[in-house]
Length: 546
Image 1 (tube, rainbow, N blue to C red):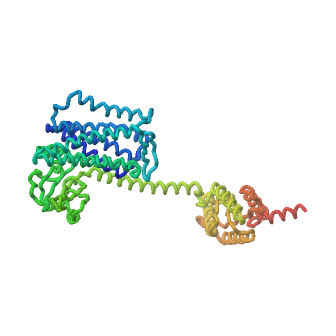
Image 2: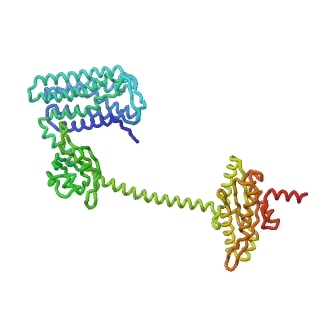
Image 3: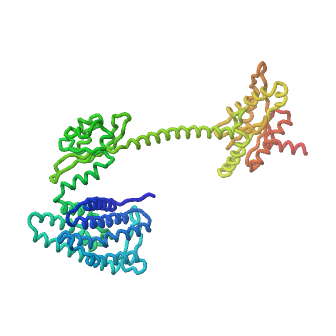
């Protein structure tokens, strides 16, 4: 199933990912408030992650289900934020069962109201899907319980912010920056949420808060765990870099290698630690021929071929790293192994080339079979099947465009005598000679067919009887001067021809062929080597009857 993703969804997913990573990092720490921070960050990840589905082209049922899951994170977040602040300020002694039970009543009740909204419509008066530019958006009308939930959430968050601000005012210089960071990280999503609610209609229901959770998550983790920040880095690095399948190089501003992960051992020779401090483009010069493109200060992506046996293909992404003054600090290089993909592409190209060749061969064979189906194998003229199909279409076209179609029915004179005297091979040579003459005499648009045995038909669209008679006379003249060589003999050919024209001699295929056949037998009865039109045959019959 194809899922279209709006940029809002990308930002929301990114925020969820950051919050989830920060939650995992906080979970492993033992600093005050780290447990509640982990749960807070996880609720932010749930809210932001499932909020992204609102901006995806997925089924309405999935959207509604994801909204219900998202609401769990949204409902739990204010309470978890207050618990985090209280824990951070007063320690875990505040987390009594009674206090937790009291603070969990409203979030649990609001979640139940949300999951049963279809029965009372107190939270959302209506939920509907409306078409947007590239996807189906979900719009809702806020109900009374929605505003109660907003007021309650803002009140809880306001209490937590008040506690934080008081602690920041009373704390010494050592902790003031820490509290300020927590305040900054807390106010950012709260302010964007207030803005989103005040301009709900103008923003078409867009909630900006989930898009900023990633920034808040980073700020929270840094502020609370800054006293053990140097211990946090190896953990994050161990999980996100050491165990990554992609090779990673970190360069300084002079392109010297300052960090390298074990995954790069799959592509280089020797121990990775031996490369530290060396210039990356000198070490990997055989890989990176276009170093200028990688050093232009912009994020760059290219493909490399590693000169190993067997060869490996890598996708390289180079990201410049800047400090707060926008000065280049170094570069992050990520090497992703795409050898398997390249091999698959190569196999696909090979298979595609074979398929193309086979398609051409199949097309040729189909064309040959079509020709064989409509051609007489001896004379290579069209056969009777082709004549019947094509003549039907030609007569229909002649009826639409109002023109005549003339037919010459041809029969070889004394053909049986040739077969009996000289053999069937001689008869075949005579038939082929006649077919060649007919093909030579046909103009563009005409077609000659072997009707059966020694009978042939020439179809001539858009000519009258007189012209057809002249064409028949030319054919007879050509054959009269032709002698077919066979062994030591030169065989003479004479033919009898009957002419019929549509529509004067018949308006259907059967009628016009029958008229031409009768005229041809009339020519035979007149002494052979004759040409007789159907009109002339009728005149002769009328004379004989008189």
